[in-house]
Image 1 (cartoon, rainbow, N blue to C red):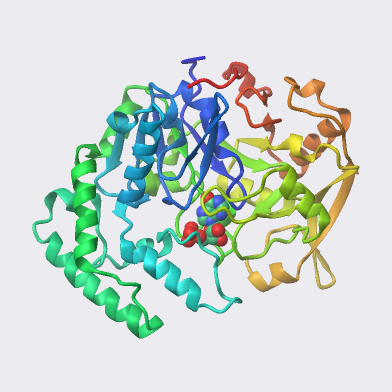
Image 2: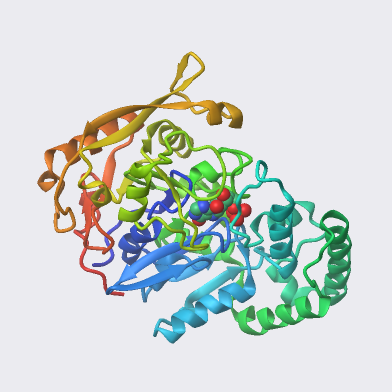
Length: 447
Ligand code: IMP
């Protein structure tokens, strides 16, 4: 499968992450010369299943598994250099060499050991009511330093800052003092160890550091097609998500301008990925959550345990209120609805179409955490379906009630469901018009 003119595309999550973006990226990436990460860091977990082999990627763009794609880590990504090297080496040990076709922006920021320590200590120190439940990958503290500016380190500094060692020593001394004052602990933070990490990063990654902004603009001018991979999900977006229970970056197509250095107007398709039910890891409001046997059943059927942290995911019915909002904010042109097969065997499936807050019925998504926490889901129950959907290859061949469920989601969310996942393999994907005109029917996975 190769090469039709699809147009620049962004694949991103419409929910709280873990929507199955990796699979959609894998499906699309054979059409693109460049695959780009523009936000987040190793908090993301993209699982791609190829030839029955599972690959869990955190920092690398998932599309880089394809032989001909160049992977770009844009200015808006926060990169743990040791984590990235580990990921590159793990792939190499399994016969996939990405090192020669990976580019890291000079402008991207480094996640340092002290960011991970701060993430952990600050979460431990927060009471259970105010803990965010982060992935402990140092994401928030690194973005905070980026905004603070004087305590940040960018990849360009590895190549051009003559005083980097002195600066790191001063930063580490300040961090140690602040951790001791705030938490009474600095987890053994040591400047020499941080400098040793930086040396490893410089030795292994220097050749990959480049001006990715110029690279991408050159690609646009020469009509190469670019696939942008959003990490996390729209409801975890720093501005539009369920603040403060969010991550620290812009997770949707609007993040491309800031995080990749190219305008979002280059996009032809904005594919919002979401599961046929809702999940969330970490703390924060989740109106349609099923903290009962039905939720447990969805978790086991969908293997809903975190790729990055292994944590069991909270599960619930499809929350159309939040997804409609996320689709509006991101101007999604298509929805990719994943894991439809997971809902097989339920007598009825639920769709949360509105919230009841006090004596009001609300269809817009509230900004206020305590209102979201009080909100009760108004759930429409639709007939379920039986049977294994994994061998089905067209929308029309789905059981009637599965089709009706998808159509109801389309009408409530207001965006066409153009891709449907009916199993983990690339071939277990249904592509509907109008995307079917540009995307050939998916084949079984091969890299
Ligand atoms: P952080 O991004 O590690 O700071 O975590 C902030 C919140 O976002 C926590 O609730 C995390 O569980 C959640 N989160 C961040 N990235 C992902 C993701 O890729 N999938 C699911 N949840 C995520």
